[in-house]
Image (cartoon, rainbow, N blue to C red):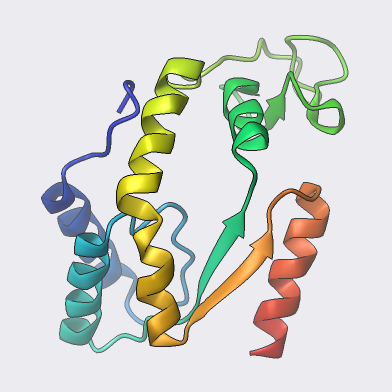
Length: 164
């Protein structure tokens, strides 16, 4: 994972299945899964087996340059979990390197660098982007402009969910 590569499908599918069995029929949000058509097909089979509904798929459309900036500049608080971005003005911590809430020193994930981003972006183009067509054909895909502020993105997602 630290190199930007995906975790083996069988591990992800098994972990997710166990979690779905544990939580039952509660609504959930999956962020970053599925990442491949193979995972999506396995997920569809799992949902059928557990008698659960797929729900809705939302894709955030973001320019490559902004994606890289969001990844490379990301830092987080190991104490309270707040996330900041050193490269995006609206997301910078008030005091450089320190959490706004608990003043703990912020840390950077090992895979939040340009090299890992390039691998992850290539993986996205080759294996994840085909999911857009996969879910469009199922009629459950919604697009959100991910180039906006986090507040606008959130509002757009809420608007989609409220209309459905």
